[in-house]
Length: 67
View 1 (cartoon, helix red, strand yellow):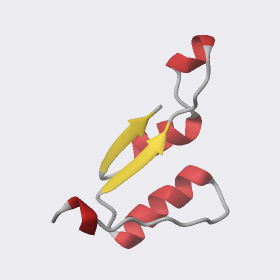
View 2 (cartoon, rainbow, N blue to C red):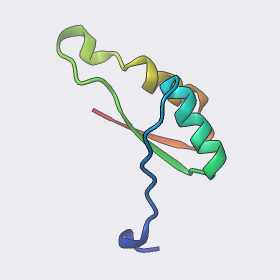
View 3 (cartoon, rainbow, N blue to C red):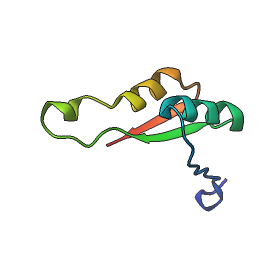
């Protein structure tokens, strides 16, 4: 599959963010989640947000964490 034909899912929903992301992964058979950590400064820049952390812990597929 070339990169022009990679399916991408974008969806807006309400609820607990990481739970909704993981639910979507299960329902759609997602094989990669791309999620951003919080772009903070100081000591906070070394810690990732709770949504990203919970997605990393709960995902059964690969997760790409960006900053």
